[in-house]
Amino acid sequence: MTDLLSGIGIEHVTLLIIIATLVIFLLDRIPIALTALISSIVLALVGAMDFKQVYSGFATPVTLLVFGMLIVGYALFETGAITILGKKILKSRVARNERALLGVLMLVAGIASAFLSNTALMATFIPLVGGMVATASGHLTNKNLLMPLGMAASVGGTITLVGSTSQPVASGIMSESGYGELGMFDFAPIAIPMLLVLILYMMTIGYNMERKFFKFEDHSTVGADDAEGSLDVKVTWKTWVATLTLVFCVISFMFGLLPIEITALIGAAIVLATGCIDFKTAMAQLDWNTVLLIAFAQGIAAGMNDSGAGKLVGEWSVAIVGESPAVLLAIAVVVTVVLTNIMSNTAVAAMMVPIFVSIAVGVGYHPFVFVLAIAIASNASIATPIGGTAMSQTLVAGYGFRDYLKLGAPITIVLTIMIAVITPLVFGFPQL
Image (cartoon, rainbow, N blue to C red; front, side, top):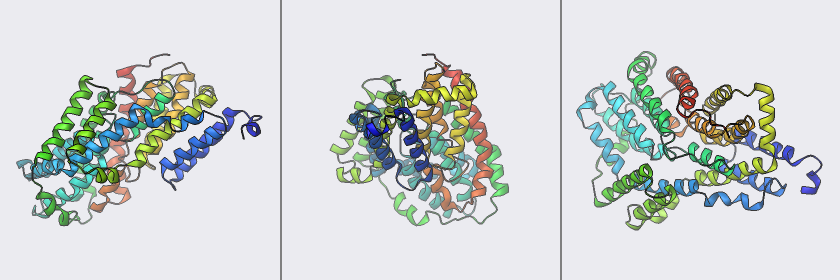
């Protein structure tokens, strides 16, 4: 096959394969991990990279990090630690005022999402909120609480490397391209201000917009059937083990006590060995689509890098838009934000990062700032219920598509500007 394609130029063949991969990502007809696998295999078959590059992503730190932290997160939900936290919030004085409760829930969801699965967090909090609303005599509503909760979970998930799937995918691709990895808390200087601005918006302008525009009847029974069982969760020794394991992981991440992937694997071993979560249950719940995508997406990056396709994309891009890194970064952020609101945020990161690694290198800059900005921007999927799972889960409150646009579009524009401006202010544009 290599001989047949040698006359075309392997870099051009690689680009055709990458374009086909992007189209399949956009169509979203098959799992994105399967698309990444097929693309990696085809790239190896045509000679764009060595065959070992197809599976080498499984041994990278970022893949092992995500694998371990997913299991630690599942243990926290399995032992009831997150449910107990939610129950305490909903039984506190702050729950008497909807606006105040909204702010507290968003803050907790944002912080928790930095280390835990957004999907599992929302699946836990939706019935808790629904149960509280059902007994609140009308002063609390699902329609005013659930969409902001989903927004906070989405944006808060960008604070760390493990908070959402986009970050490890982006980090793995950059690493495979030979430019190092993103750090555990590199996102925080941009993501934390974004979360705080989002909460401030929702407690002021956003809350007033909800009361003005959300005229539909509140689905007051959302999650109420599941809430009673959730509220019966008791603290056990396993709850403490799972919680302290997460604390250990966070401390180790912050102070560099151990390599991040070893920390995550130790955490997973602890919660599995102590029975905080059953091994078979953990393997059944594990988001294999994410783990496999992270591994195989690195193969796609290797194909672009080794074949020369990435260099070609960089040269073309510079010829079209020039060499200004600020302009290139703004384009990357805007395009990513638009795409992430109409398709999977993980797929968007897998699409955009290899392209802008090549573009950044083509103009002589280290791709770190571009990759970081794209990873964060791919989680700004709060203007529609499509791009992020956390937002999709809030549909149970009875929102229409226009409701998401009315509430989410203004703050999405603000967050987009913040990413494009704050990222280079904090990190600059380091040259190669």
